[in-house]
Amino acid sequence: YIVIGLTLLVTSGVRGLLGKWTRVGAGLVLAPGLLAAGQFSTWLGALLVGALLIWRLPTVRVSAVRFAPILGIAVLAGAPALLGRFRDFSGGELPRSWLVRWDNVTHLFLPHLVENGRFLVGVSPNSTVVPPDTWRDIVYLESGYLQLLWVGGVPLLLGFIALSWTVLSLTHRLSSRTDSVGACASALNIAWWMVLVLSLMDPHLFMRGAGDLLFTLIAIVTGRAAEESSDDATG
Image 1 (cartoon, one colour):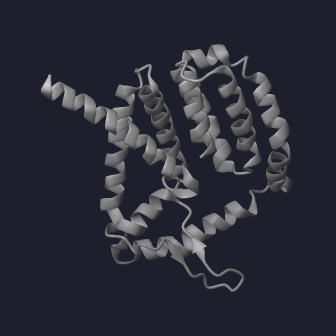
Image 2 (image 1 turned 90 degrees about the horizontal axis):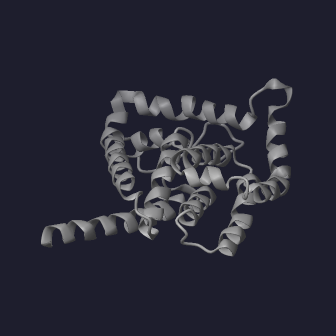
Image 3 (image 1 turned 45 degrees about the vertical axis):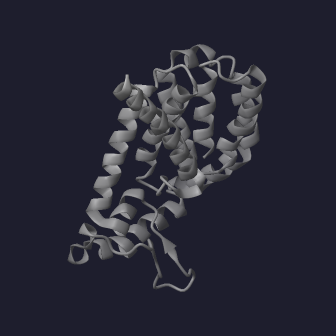
């Protein structure tokens, strides 16, 4: 949610839609939150989005020096969470949470998916299982693509692929606009690539409020596209 908000802040800022102090104020709130969140997926998403912003928007490269103080404040504010998570790599081993997640996927979920080809039509609308051990009550499926197969099988996965193709194609076309719709389209295009990558690890299409923001952006962009189609048809 924070990464998407920052992306929209940048795509709006480079179009001159936001004042200087609005950009600075929002940046001082959102940027430290990236590190303070303490989530590897958040940091990975931020790196991916940052690379796409620099690649797609030359203005961002020019303005990078001016944003350096905000990045410095972000590092200082988020350093405790960042250092705390990197301690999980002590001893040269992967974090225990990663190993547990992999064990959950391979031993608790994949057997149900492959059993009698249930991945074709889905297992259950509830993507949780009750583990055989006693130290936890429930286990969540932590993979977006496997969750699509779990909930709706191959048809739902194909639906997500079709949705992704449509979103990326439409937002690519509208990203050249210099108004707020163009800013939303540009932000949505970049954020959707983040979703495609991070869904390998978590169902990021809807969890932690990201879906609320993503589908709001989709509504804005598709609404404008529908208006343009209507204008073309009548004009």
